[in-house]
Structure formats: structure tokens, C-alpha cells
Image (tube, rainbow, N blue to C red):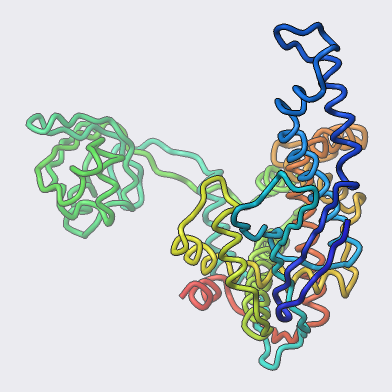
Length: 440
């Protein structure tokens, strides 16, 4: 067997594989002898079928199968030994009038070669690394939300602004009759609100559905109308008050602090604010880190210039899927995936040059941390090491899960690498301003 390569240019090559009779003949002969021993052909005793008949019936199929096995095995071995970094898979060149009746065969394969390029994470223009902070307004709003969530309802006779009013919406013609609890903060406009203020249990209020709520979708919830009906609904409904409640906010006392953070972990309003700020900024850090990964990725793709074997890759895309694509479909698919392929190559080079390898212990540690967080959400704050080990082992028995976790560990390593080596510019801002700036 002889394998040679001709480099067309820096990104394309053709490999020629020559297979002689000596390469495949011993294996083909052995298989045909085994066929002869076991063949059941009418008119012949088992094991006594003439070899000529066996060859006539099975010879070419066995020959094709064995030559293809030799071809794939030796081509893959050659690519590995030559350390050729190929994109996609080798594409066999079409050969007209191929003759299997010959003794020697030659096959040619097109290769798309990975480009050579350098990556520098210290881009000329600085990349913004956002530091998202929880401002006083956000903290105060969070405290109000907590007080409301843990507060209590106090029954009343007369409606005031901010109350919760239970009752029944009705309109006989439209078939509307729905019992609901209505927070008055949902009501739109002073005129509508004034119809409630001062009303008592048993009173019936008449309202127009048009502009009753800030959002027409609230009609779906409170009147139980269909989605299509809610938009531009303009009818008259009655609302009979059955109950009035005032929501009293929870006191900012030790009982509330213990419910929120465990006994004795927070002992004052000052510490509560610090804890809310810390928890919020920990969550913001995840968004900030993800944004940094996105922004560095975009910058590296834009600043790292290299060519790809585009024509080869389009031909490979045409034939590599479950269904063969047209040239136009393959071109469109290539254009969609080109950016991702470029970053795969850039990322692979960074990982290789900086030895950013993922170890099994790191995957296990990340898995344990995730499990602890999930268990904490259900009140299990201190799981035993044995429980953690058992659950971790079950998670890591799933290869898809291992692959996903491995990618997440690598992303974390790349993130730390970028933080240490990229040209970053710190920018501190509130979450609201972060959303405005990043998501426009």
C-alpha cells in the first residue's frame, strides 16, 4: 500500500491511496473459505461448494468490503501519523468507470486543512468588563417585596387605595362570571380607581373594560376571557365586592431575618441590606461574566484573521448530513456556521497553547457545588459527604451530562484566562443601566 499527498495550497490537499492485490488478497481468500465451509447452496453438500461458485456469488461484495476497510483504516492512520489538522472529513473524489475487476486500485481524497494563525487576546481596543452593582433603590425595592411577600392580610369593610379587593366580575351577554382577587394597583386611571375607593363589601361597581388595566392581558386573568377577545375589548361589566383586605407588610425584625437567612445569620436592617446587596451582586456577576465571554468571543473573531477552505467545507456540508443538500443549501448552511467554526479554531488554539485542560476532579467539584445549591433551595443546607458523592456519581454516569459539565468547566477556565490576559476596561453600573447598555 502506498499513500501520497499533494498540497494544492495552504488550505487544500489531495491524498492518494494505492492498494495492491497483496494488501487485501489474504483476508478476502480467508473470508471466502469461511463462506465455503458454511454456505448452503442447493445441489451441494455443506462445505463442498466449489470455490469458483462461492467467488462468483460473494467474491466482489467481500472484495469491496475489505478494500473499504483497508482504505479507512490506513487513511485515518496516515492523517494521525502526519499530524494533519483537517476540517470536516476527507471527501472521496469521484472516479468515472471504476473497475473492480482489476487487481490494484487507487483512490483519491480531498482534504480541507486547518489554517495557521496567531491569537492575541490583548486586543488593541479595550473590552468592557461590567461590574454590576445593586444600588440603594434596588435594595429598598427588594426589601418592600420581601415585606409584602411575608406580610399578612387584614380584613376591612371599606376600600382604600392599595387594598386587595375580592369579588365577582359579570357580564351576562358575554358569558362573563369570574370570581377573583384584584390588587387595586392593577387598576388604570384615577376615574376607575375612585369607583373602588370608599366602596364596601356588598357594593356593586360598574366598569368599562376599555382602559381598565394598564395591560389588556390582565383581562384574561381577572375576567377569564380568551386572548383574542382581550385585545380592544370594550364592554361594560359589574364587580360585586365580597371581601376587602389590606396587606400589612412584615416587620423588619429578627423573626423575619431568621426566616430569610437562617437563625442568627442576619441581626439588623443594616445587615439585611448588606446581605441583599451581596446576593444580588453574586447573581449579577454571572451575567457580567457571561457578557464578558460573549464580548471577548466577538472581539477575537473580528480581530483574528485567517482564511478557511470554504469551497471544500461547502462540498463536505452537502454530503455529511442525513439528507444530501443542494449547492445553494450547503452555501447557506456554511454561511450560518462559519462564525462558530472560526471561534472553535480560535478557542482550540488558545486551549492548546495555554494548556487549559479539564480534569475529572474539576468536573466532580463543579457537580458537587451545583448539587449543594439545588439542595439548599429545598432547605437541605448541610448534606453529608456520602450523599454528595452518591448523587455526583449518578450524575457523572450520564456521558451527555459529563460533556456538558466539561464544557462549562472549560468556559470557566477561559473566563479566568481572559480576566488575567485580555485588554479589559472595568465599568461599574447598576443592573438597570447594564440592561439598557448591553441589550439596547
